[in-house]
Image (cartoon, rainbow, N blue to C red):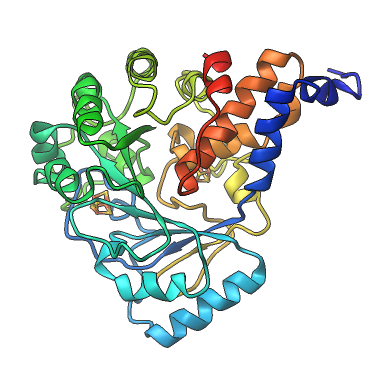
Length: 359
Ligand code: SF4
Ligand code: SF4
């Protein structure tokens, strides 16, 4: 579609839209990913890290001084925002402190069961898989109860509820709990690993601690009906808890569309248009500080059913030009970027105007 060259300027003539646009541009962050440990105190069913061959098989004995030098070099490479992951980064806080010597912002992916040094400058995304009953079933412990005890009311924390086939109906209960604890919550969608899918299909029979209860008939994968239900429940939660739920209506619509969200190479099964894979600066480092440019931030995940929030937000955000056809389309796109920043920047306040218009 050819667009009048001044289409963007036309939308930005609105001072409210301009203010949000200028604000999100000010907060541009350059992200790369780091698995800082392969240890975890849990073994969750269908774990993206342990249920596969591309994350866990690396040495985990790099010394602290090497980590310091490494993070300094990453900052010099132009990275401004590390995604610190693992397995469980809270188990290696000396490495998080080494990262903090080079970065004044970043994000730690954690299961929320261990206290993380409040002096670290990072946001925390705390993985949530459901209520006490589903936590025991999928994760072997009351993970959310512990996380709320440790991080309720902590403004570093976003509780990240990963919706799966078996936990969508618990979402309202959990949003209420997080709201009552004075915290914020957002949503992700379960994205199976290639190994998990092979096991469900019966073409791989390895038994592991992260594949205990799933079967072809009863597993975590979201089908089209689940996606539709998840979209409706998330919409209701956004409307009912606007200060607690950090999520975007347009993102919700996009991530809930049936079928693969990415263009898939029929031979390799890999996404050809994944913005994480295609960004020249993004690398996913293993625990031995090696990396491979054929890997994204979640290298075991099957691209055909990938709905991981980092990849889907990146997909939408990279396509500003596709959202210039109308003011509404542009505002909805801008709201996704605004939401992404609220998930990443400590103290960031979302635009109320966009929240109203994007719904
Ligand atoms: S999903 Fe996260 S918390 Fe659970 S086993 Fe995997 S790394 Fe650990
Ligand atoms: S983030 Fe990209 S490369 Fe990784 S699984 Fe998802 S679509 Fe594939």
